[in-house]
Amino acid sequence: MTSRAIFILAGVWGLSVAVAVHLLDFPGSVPDFQHASGGGTLLDAVPAFTSPETYARLDAYGPAGRKNYATRTVTVDVLLPLSVLPFLFLVARRAVAAATLSGVARTALLAMPFVYVIFDFIENGLLLALLAEYPNQLEVLPRLLPFITVIKRAASLLALALPLTLLAVHVARSRLRGAKGST
Figure 1 (tube, rainbow, N blue to C red):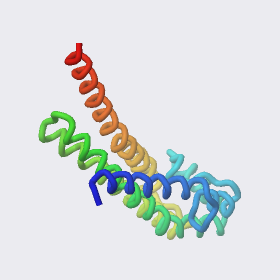
Figure 2 (tube, helix red, strand yellow; figure 1 turned 45 degrees about the vertical axis):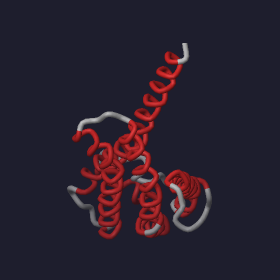
Figure 3 (cartoon, rainbow, N blue to C red; figure 1 turned 60 degrees about the horizontal axis):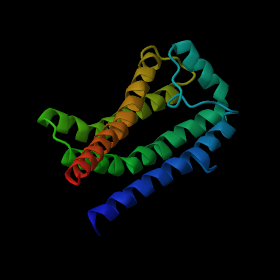
Figure 4 (tube, helix red, strand yellow; figure 1 turned 90 degrees about the vertical axis):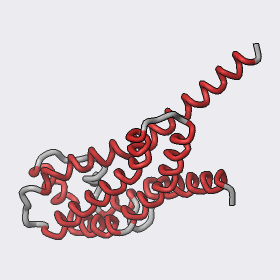
């Protein structure tokens, strides 16, 4: 299989899993959680920035919603980041090959998909701890969770946007050079 075919396959797989998790109704999907929780919003989708807000949302999920959340956290929310990781890494690798970057910039760009996945897994651990201890209210974890979520979200966006931007600049420069050479 060619590297282009692997790249396309990784992209199709990652996109398919992401779309399925967010739009289709199956055990562990976002619509399944919303149904089980009476319309609740996942803490890892929209952070709650205070402990009272976190626990109010956990209360509102009800027993079925909290159980669903715990199950989806160890299934779908492990599958999703691992499904997009290959594509994000391959995009970063292509961008590194196309751009002239310092060693630190190359390393940061190639590491960003892994930073995203690591923070997603840290977030999952915090969520599982909160759900396992419920209704006991923990002090530190609800305050830490939204910041981990924001870092995860930023890393996921950077893991996609930075390489795509570098690739777009590379293509634009190549076309400009080609246009200047043909005149």
